[in-house]
Image 1 (cartoon, helix red, strand yellow):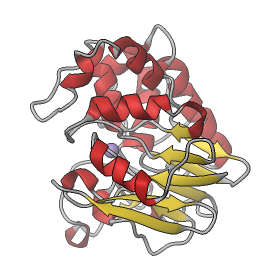
Image 2 (cartoon, rainbow, N blue to C red):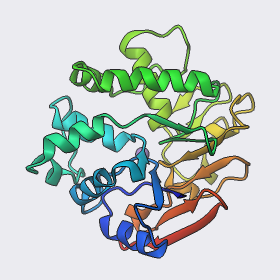
Image 3 (cartoon, rainbow, N blue to C red):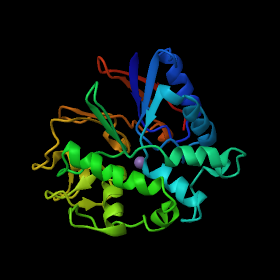
Image 4 (cartoon, rainbow, N blue to C red):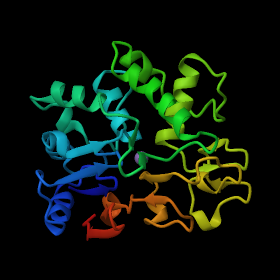
Length: 270
Ligand SMILES: [Mn+2]
């Protein structure tokens, strides 16, 4: 079995099909992992969701911020934004099945055989694997319960921005979710910062990418993640595999073959 991890698809169905042609994907022999953000901003969110769901055992995916936003809008827990492009899902005949399937995807995936971990944005600098898996599970439990609408209605917000194991209730879940699905820059203590939106090279001096926090305890883990197109698939540290190469912004859609870390990509039309 060959495993390929693929970055943020965001509704770019045609690019995904081209990429799968490029790697000669065969669902009985290969497995696809997706870094989340399957939907939104791109043109064909419904086709992407239907296709990935149809892969069944031949795929793994983790939830991204856009996937959670789709669930929130569908359940009436949040308003759609003017640039959301998932209305095709909201009006589809199979909407309920698709959303039920999506809500049951994990926040973190750890494959014991290959020892790769995958989340949408990364891991909080202070989390080891055991803690990260337990915290991801807390969020998954809510998403898969009848409290999902309550959770999603209270999900939005940047605070609390610093992980603390004593957090409780909805603040705790929001903080875990923000680290797993929205994190890019932190300060040197690992506190999240969502205010800076500019280029990495122009960032304020006190902000650093989450994976460069000096005290990070998970730097030996092999982490596949998406969410950060500006990294363009590269960081200068070992064990990190950023795969969002900005497909939906006219960049590329990228797959990495886990066994030999070979990359495959297709250029996307904006
Ligand atoms: Mn994202």
